[in-house]
Image (cartoon, rainbow over all chains, first blue to last red; front, side, top):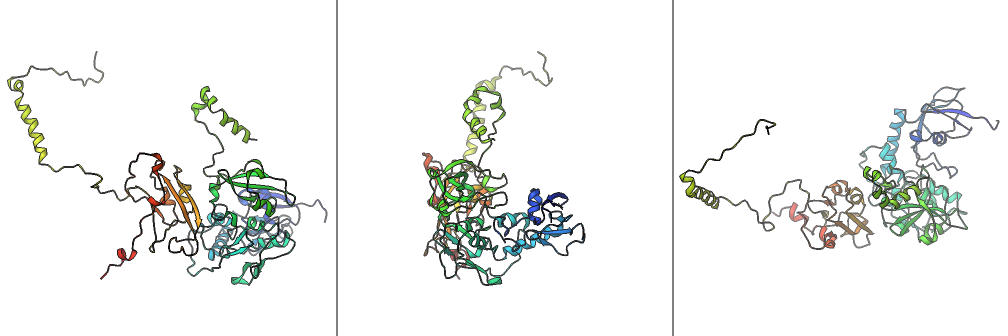
Length: 338
Length: 173
């Protein structure tokens, strides 16, 4: 096949040209906005991820130009590659929205819903997903599956009760670290993430499983119960790190760096994986070169009580004395704006 | 000048007659009103010894609730502080240790919980936000004080005293 072949796909009626072999999800991400299906298990930086959680289900109403029959069932968009002339329905199909509701209900069946305690609350993908697509109530009446907390190494804690078995952390262990030390034990309902005989995970990139975890199953022990995410201020910073890119987000509360994470893009995926030295050892402002405040979506709870834009009352705009008094404020805003 | 509304009344002052000039009838009339009030019930309520009944939805001082086993309900989730429009609430959370299960309901609890009563506007958004039914504005008025620092109420003032659930809900035969 020639290199320059492009497939024409339409997602919710929006046309897009993509290379052959692209998945529907990635084609939708090229368009962006509301048509992008949510994804809990797919992670673009991890090979082989996806296909587990079924939140990205879409309807293919026309298979391709040559075979225009629709696909008989909803397909997982992270695993289905596009065909030329394919027509996909994401949010325009009531069937898809209904299916997503069902998937959220399934994911939440064994989830403890301990968001008031969980450190992930506020940046949890499952919270966002259930808020956008789920039902307000649960129909599940039985005992939820519970596990004891496990310490994976001295810096990471595993709450298996919160896990949705997306396998992302297993792919991290497989692909980022030299030898695999944890994985899935058991099958079906009894499946759990484990290190087998509680063997500690100690290699330089193990901390990334915290970042890839879409829920609060893998959390930073150094940040455990320190503060709520929305009370901390994210700041972009970097440092000269010999093992990783060193580009991180620092989460400040007052003068203290409470935790260090990788920078996440719009889909909550780390832009570059960082090493454990950056993540756990360097928690002083002097270790980092600050780039500026992280841009947080207005809809995110993390942006609450963070005032980026100075919106002076009309009286300030007219009065020169008041403008001189607020000079420093105005200058700060001009520095922030590109 | 002519009146604009045409509703102006011109009062003419007549000279007082004999009874008006001796003033006595007017004095007795006034005294009788005063003496009549000696025998009427007194509407003054001697606060703080006596309190008027409060309205059912009155919002007063906050109290941090305990559950039926006497454990603190608050789990320091921070939603009250997030919802607070006056930013009056702060808290520091801590992890429940082994052996403290009778003190705290969840595995996380508020080690420090402070409300600045000078900032608080008693809007009740915190009790609406609370997912654990831990905070209610069911107390009396917040009392006056002399120093600003004394208006920052900590857990010593906010947490409700222990009570025996059985005494109130299972009457002894």
